[in-house]
Image 1: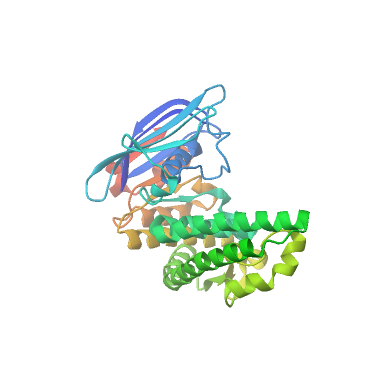
Image 2 (image 1 turned 45 degrees about the vertical axis):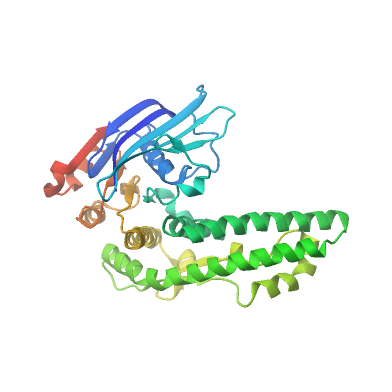
Length: 358
């Protein structure tokens, strides 16, 4: 899959921006000129939201009353498609395929697969478990519509069960029928989600280890452990009620799942160096790319933001030699130094490389 053309209107720091792209696209400029914002716009067209944005309040350029992102793509079979994301002030965001707006954003997820590598990726190791679940959910939602549907339904049911617990906490009134309904719904959705997460890790470990060893050139053994609840969730929910009616929220379920990262049996969070943590997450992202490609039969778009901030020059050269091979697809990367970018692009790829100076 290729993004042929991107057009922005009032998106973050851009009043207007438009550019055509090739296979390897290098966006060069000083800090603060909007390099990352271009990658974020591409990410937006895949996920209907920004990479780091919890909401859309900072998406529209200051002083404007709308933003719009337009992307023209060539699909794997050569088909041309356009996707648009826009929002007017005080109105709902709209995602369109061609001229037709989606009724639900979930209908679009997976249409334009994309993987983002960012300097902030270490947060997946150092941050809260919610961040790691986000990584897992974004990955699986792009390749499995059943997973996405169950995840949406689980989160809605969890919200309703928590509201019921909060109401019971405040009023002392116990609605046993409503509680039973939400317990059953959560259990049904969670069973599907947990099974799919477990299946994923069975096939994810080997490519992840392959990419880690390629990048690091050493004999460390990396491993990702999936931690989830054990037993029947319906029973666990029923048994946890006495505690939950006091604290007012649900304490067991797949919303408490976590990933634990190891190198040679040692927790990367506690004992891994910064270099090991960066390499670990890059290998995770490349394995994510590989998984999506195999599952969907489509090469995702790969976004590499400030990659020199993560690795030394020799390591970056090695990474670029990998991601510019034929079995990888379109690549976007950002950097602050033009000469450095020109030096890392393989000579054989110069004719399919576009350099965009901001």
